[in-house]
Structure formats: structure tokens, C-alpha cells
Image 1 (tube, rainbow, N blue to C red):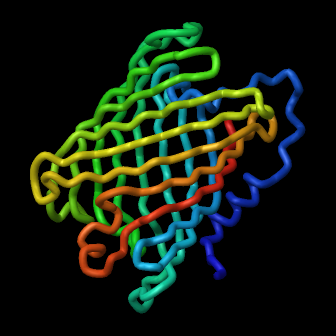
Image 2: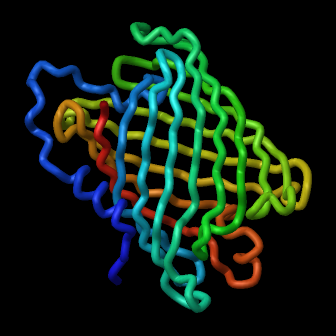
Length: 269
């Protein structure tokens, strides 16, 4: 399948894939294994999504992060994709879901080898896309993320969030609940910048139309260093229970996100 991308996305892909080996050898390595460190970066890559009814989608996702001083950063994601299968006329390609997240870090003890390191706050807004398979829900998460060091190689980040879900365009509030997710990060010496992330996440709704329903996923992420300022990573995700990105549509058609894979290249600044 040929995925036609807007010109600006094609330009960004070309930029990210350029050889970037001209940096000085003594330039410090950005610590991509720590989600609490404040950096600016730009990344992107292809994503393949498989649905439970046999349909699938190819997508290009663009991810940008802007450091806002020493303790704050703003993450932005957007995607453009092409959906196969029994799509409505004229709707088999278009913009997918977007995401904006504000992240604030309180005092964090990065030198601690074992124990509680500190706390962060986050406000995460995920907006439904226009393309089939991504046009289900708008979801807003607000919560805290404490961090623990288990050893020099293992770290754990646990998020607890208040979750609210609306239909596209915020037309109808479908429920409120609690969200829990963890980032279990292993930093072995397999290759330059090697990292293994295990990321379970689950939201359970306690009120509204989604009451007593849950939505979750498990991500396995493997990454490494291309050069001191450029990283690669590959993510496999399996989804469980309700798929909020296809909510309502999926009840009638069986269209729910089953699993997906995503390859990403990120340049840090």
C-alpha cells in the first residue's frame, strides 16, 4: 500500500533520516531512558495498526517535545495515515489522533542509586482524529508520576491519573475514572544507548456510560543510540478491553485496535 503523506511530513522524514555523524565525540549523550529529564527533541516514523475485524492502518507519526525552562516541557504528537478495509468513500486517508502533554518536574535526585527519586506532574490531552480507527474519543488525563531507582540499570516511573473521556468534538461526556501506568526501564550495556522499556497501562471508569469498563495496553520498547544526539526505538503494543480510539464505531463493526508496531527516530537538541 502506498501511503501518501503531506509535503511537510515528507520533508521532516527526510530530515530525520539524514546521517548525523558530524557531532563532536565529546558531546554528552542525552539520557533517553529517563522520562523526567527536560529536553527538546523532534522524532517520527512509521506505525502499523492491526484491528480486530481484519482491517489495518499505516500511519506516520510525528513527535516533538519543547523544553520550557528547567522544570517544564511540552510534548506534541500528530499523525497522518491510510486505513484499509471497508472504509467509507473518501475517508480512507487523513489525520489521525493528536496529543498534547504538559509535564512539570519537581526536585529530582538523579544521583540516587536506589530509592525514591522525586515527583512529577502531568496534564495529558488526547484528541480524536478524522480517520476511521482514530476518531473515537477525546481523553484528558491529569495526575502525578513518582520515580524510583532500583539499581544503576533499573528504574520505575509510576503514573496515577484522573481520566475523563468525551466523544469527538467533546459532544458527550462518557465517563470518569482512574488511570494507572508504569514505565519499567532497563539500561543494559548491549549497544550504545541500549534501553528496554516495559510499559503497562490501564484505565478503569467509575462513572458515566463507560462505568465498570476498562481500557489498557502493554508496550514493549527497545532502543539505542545512532549518535550522541540521535536515538532509535521500536515499540510493540498489545491492547486490552475497550479501545477508546474506536469507541461507538467498534460496537457495531468490531473495529478495535488489537496490536501495533512503531519505529521511531528522535533527534535531541
